[in-house]
Length: 384
Image (tube, rainbow, N blue to C red):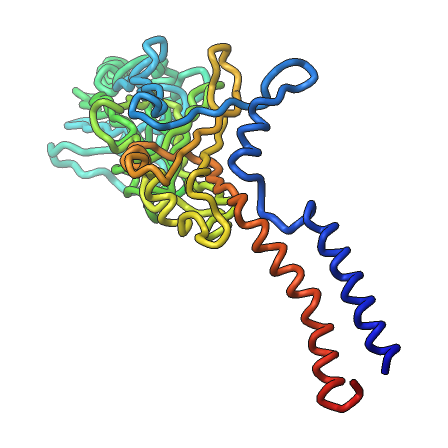
């Protein structure tokens, strides 16, 4: 029995030593606010600060987002016109009265006599595609240059070419399918496909509406416009903001609506540690804290709330910046309402330094509880 008691005391002493040695390595979810500030003050071997901290304690300290105006169009590119171009499909109808050239050709081919009345007869040619050289082939006329002409000009050209072959022919040319003045719309739209532009100069918002609108939640959708070698991406909420953000669409543009929710990550001693989607197109820090559960009352330090992001420096390069908020100051709640979160921001809540003693007590308690349980069991059985 003395051996057992001596062993229990030895184990208790060993547990105490282990607990004391563990003080320097207690479980923690991240650095404290002081440690974050110290890391910002330290320098790398190259002499550069790894990141800078901005204390947001006044309205003047709030970051100002650079104005992001959508381009209104490139003047070097041609706007939509009514000119015919390569790839367009033309619909040609020829009206004849009296001696009909096309009706006679059809009679010779089919053996069916044409009507002998003086009424006008119409012949609709098969769809004519403008080839890569900008030319079309019209029966009894031959090859014509269609590219660069309007449908009305083509009607006059075909009519003049048929004069003398047919009695007073009348020609109507229309564009059945326009490739020259069209764009491709795809992704999260109601009717993806090719959309023909008009000379009204449709805006990007107009094109999205003509394509059947968007599918899903607008706050989660990004819009990509590919124009030649350049690709521009904006949020759908920016596109639909109004005339100040109007972008004129040009022929051959490719527009794609992509489901890409804006998110921010929550780390440290917060109520929820996870990646959270924006609940609206624009989100403030106050709303982000509410979505994340705020600082954990048992672990977190309300004085050490940080937002970490990359921002463009004066040299145009991305530089890490940390915004510090002391939420124990009541005035900071108003600043948090004006601070705009950005996509892929990191919201970090520092650990409270005062929590370390309580964690040590919990650790020691967990290590001693098996010993206490064993001794209690031995006392109950009469072994001690």
